[in-house]
Image (cartoon, rainbow, N blue to C red; front, side, top):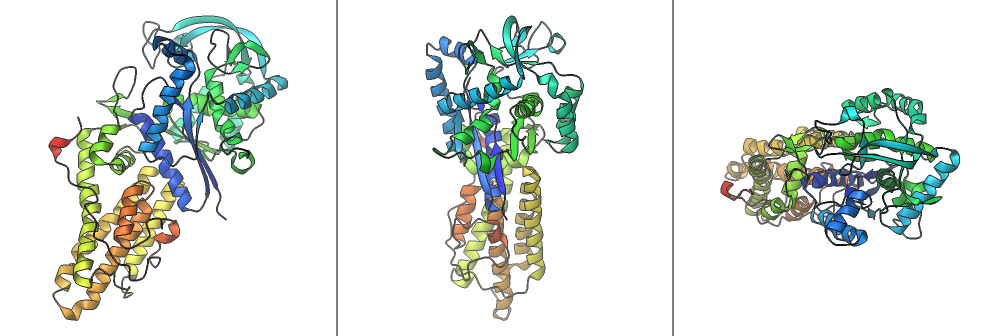
Length: 511
């Protein structure tokens, strides 16, 4: 029976416009969600925005706006980003939603009643940009944040604390019981070292921050923005469908995506909060690397960012989705370059895929009056190759290996190109005695392209729908059952398409 698949992105902090780093996480989540829908699973894809905390309050004040007004404007940009990226998320949560705030309050009341939250005093070095405290030994030169390289503040206040230290042994036991809880393995090892080195209790409220979720039993305090934000993954299910509680159907998350800078919050603090709240832990976390430009991480603080929208305008949305999946190995750092983008677009999308479709449709139109021949049944080995390619794509996606899945699918596209060169339909067409061979060649290439379109649909949804339409297939026929050799429409009529990926000259590359 098909299972469920609940996937999340981190909710994005609304302190600046979206950049390609945000786009990357959203696209990877969307690709995986689409693939699991192809499997017939009950998929729920969650994303949204994190809108509380001192940083937002300060930014709003500088802009001359109330915090909620400021959050509304910036959250809308992230929602729009998802639309432009073709994200198929089922819900977009905002931490300023009243339903979210009420659910967070109910959870921390439960934790407080268990004795896991107590009042105490705290002093530490605090980075407003990170919304996090740092030990002195973790700071960069000049008492600055190791990530943002900005001066940190010494803050002393009486707050409510979460007994994070009490969950050390339970965390280590969970890591032992579920070795793939955090992937890749290097991140699992990193999380384990954080816990083994000792855990300090977490200051989970702020007395000096008004913009946040009020602590129910102490209105002078607001919930620490990270506690508020992490619980979104649960609270969203309580109101994503009005009048329906989705918790029983979907909890816990199957897969949670994030970048490596928030590993501790998700691999250490988040499961501890869930254990305290008596909720099941996520099945697995996947920690991807950074997108680099000029050898440095993209950062709003340094201004080293890549705006994804000009690339979409120039090359099309699917080209951006493909490049990020193909060029940047999922789970590792990767460099974004104009030259690399243009090269992938030209050699792979335009030549390998787009040109193959154009040639195939034109040959079928010219040699068989636009009708895909029936299968003569002579390509059993090619059919077996298609099945192996499909199985590898499914296996790679099942292991959250987006890059590996695309590589496997692209291997099949290249095999089809070689098949055309091997069979030379244009030569077969000159000899009536070889009509059966021509039928086989045209059927096998068209059928193989149909399978390639199904396998690549999670990455290239718009383009693959065009491929299917051009081959006379229903554009929505993208379930994995359609990736079988005998699953095509009999005697489909091709519709020669416009260029799938129009050529773009190198001097037009986005700067």
